[in-house]
Image (cartoon, rainbow, N blue to C red):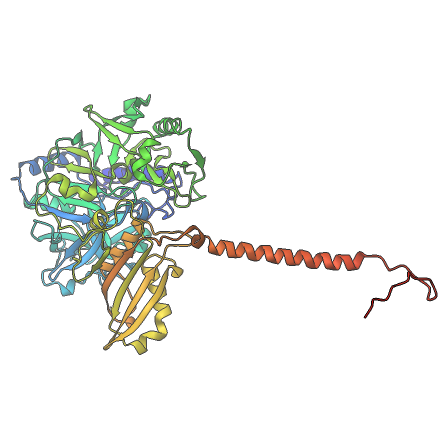
Amino acid sequence: MASEGDRAASSLALLLLVLLAGAGATGYPKPLRPNISGGGVPSMVLPLFLSLPNSTRRAAEAGYFRRRQLSTANARMRLYDDLLTNGYYTTRLYIGTPPQEFALIVDSGSTVTYVPCSSCEQCGNHQDPRFQPELSSTYEPVKCNIDCTCDQTKTQCVYERQYAEMSSSSGVLGKDLISFGKESSLMPQRAVFGCENSETGDLFSQHADGIIGLGRGQLSIMDQLVKKGVINDSFSLCYGGMDVGGGAMVLGGISAPSEMVFSLSDPVRSPYYNIELREIHVAGKRLQLDPRIFDRKHGTILDSGTTYAYLPEEAFVAFRDAIMSKLHSLKQIRGPDPNYKDICFAGAGSDVSQLSKTFPEVAVVFGNGQKLSLSPENYLFRHSKVQGAYCLGIFQNGKDPTTLLGGIIVRNTLVTYDRQNQKIGFWKTNCSELWERLHVSGAPSPVPSSSSYTNSTIEISPALAPSGLQGDVISGPFQVGLITFDMSLNVTYEDLEPHVSELAELIAHELELSSHQIQLMNITSKGNGTLIRWAIFPAGSADFISNTTAMGIISRLTEHRLRLPENFGSYQLVEWNVEPPSRRTWWQRHLLAMVVGISMVVLLSFSALLIWYFWRHKFEGPRTYRPVDSAVPEQELQPL
């Protein structure tokens, strides 16, 4: 017979299954990798099965952490990628001795950190090579004990996580040194992590290597570091704004800005990070909603691994109607993906900084009365097929009364998860300039100014993030018309030259581009290797490459994240260059259209002439018959 603990765990799993089934009934797919077109709407990223401590244990652990001696060290880390383009943000983590580097999805809703293991037989092809325990001199497996789930041989601890979109991860638990990058004041620490032996669903197909779990739980990297006393029980996330991406993350405490507003967060009420949401205001007017609507079921959950925001039905309808009532000057259009009924508007212009002149300001009010103002980028996403069009990034959470706030709500907002004091703080800022705005000493030095738009891998730190480049190299109104880069391969010219087209296809695939966008500019022999210059052009008829796409390309290039087959050897990025769109005259921009137009006019005119000629000769009647001896008008002979 099952024990009370087993029955309680089963009941909780069933409760979460019902919750997530309700979210899935809306047709929202794949929370970890939403539709890249911008039309896909991901659902909750909440594990279906968790080894959750009971409320008494959580309260006791919270008290234990509060009694720990405060530490001034923290791990300051960059964020990569873009929430709406990639479906997630990643950070770089280094495991083992010597360190092995990994790109991990930042997820406050997960409680374990894991990477693919070299022995994994069912793991996808990810951004970095798999973790090789045998190459780390400090790695050791976590032996079977009463506090973990053991493998069949009762020798090693194992883990398993299943997610709402039916992806899963399972493997063994290991312990090794974990480093947090060059910008961290926190020294490498021994910590337990998962070494994957199996992946399914989106976890198998995603580009990122794994997940860094920041939730509440014994295996959480936060709980482990706090228990060791090396950081304060707090962490912060700052997501870059629309078209920018990147951002920053801090494990440990930071000085809260004076303008930061807070909401209480009760660890006993929910294993997830929750806030006390009471009101929503649109254009200064409070929505007529019962405050208890935001406290139903799991309350209001803040989750960094979820892309959009989801409201209970009644709250969503009121919010949608209030927004639409203020947009009479815009035209409502279809969303980018016909599979989803997105609410989109055209005619707002492409300048994000001017959206507040068209779309109303939104504010949320917490239980303590403090208010957080949201700009349009906190509830809109760009329409991927119509320039100057935007869609609502807040949706109805099916029939589920839980309120879920994803990353879109906190773009360009520093969010501090102050677990020690059981509150979450929000501060509107420019996350690309976070360290300067916080006056943090020892911040990363700025990259070259936008006047040159060039760089060399010799001068670039391997940990250089898109956010750093975004804020300095590609920022403001600058548009990217062309990206060129030189790469050196340790393959001879004679061996490489026949396979250049195949190499171009591989590079395009790795950079998530169409094959026609990348073109060979030059190829030369260099000793026993080959030097190649490539050019990347805008897609289709576009005049420029979006800053987000450009930064993703540059990030992959500078961090050597291209995965090429062994027959191409290893490569080294020599230099990259970004150029603005060429300034062409009206005649140059429309030359092709004019040539085609003139050709069509000539062709149609010639065809019409032929038709007229044949018609005239076909339908013209026979000439009048005249006898041989009939009189004819006399013709006067012309003098010679």
